[in-house]
Length: 288
Figure 1 (cartoon, rainbow, N blue to C red):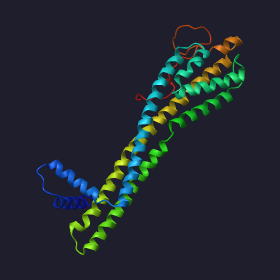
Figure 2: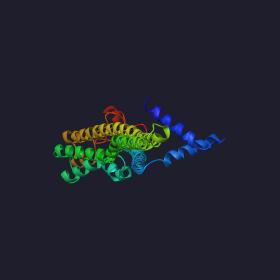
Figure 3: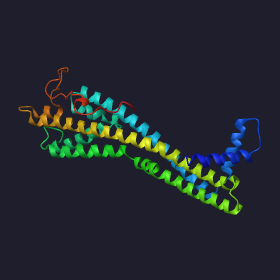
Figure 4: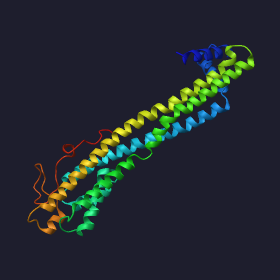
């Protein structure tokens, strides 16, 4: 109610000052232009800052939407390829096709560590380096998805205060106009009140989309982090089964993973595990 009262007063003043017109749209446009014409330099600077912040936040929003869409699609295709493959080398040769997937990044780093440890032949001698490699790769993948999200949080938190600064300066201008006029008239206080309301509305207009987008992106990043951790454990479990498999030929152990946990076409000893990712944790986001 305290906000709408000065807004009504300012709009009534603009109606009194603006010429009468039969076209209601043109009359409203003239009133709006007059309101912007009464804005001072401080309020104009505030609006420019908020405009830049809004453009940057929407750039981040659209960019992250595309990034998450590509990551989701690539992860689903990578999981399907991982389930169908019977050899580690088959996945390693095509992992570059899924570079947007955080799961593919984890597999690539773990496989490189495996090759350095075994020389490309035999079961892994020690799973601890593989576990550390998986943890590092998962952390790097999530950090990459979180890039520039802090700017969204900053814009969402500071934009209302920037608009509030313009509001305070508008109220100061209103009191100065009241003192200069020497009488409590609408014409004396309306310009400052209009300036205050415009900057307040602009701050909220910038902050609200940034808050909504940040919360949505943060929730989806948590889902990606959970899926990445689950895939890391599944991959490490498969490698641990290679290490504990009795009587497996060294060359075959180096080239194959353990037999699938669920019914699948027979691929002999060392086929990839076919357990779905959803059985070990959360599924990937359903939207891009």
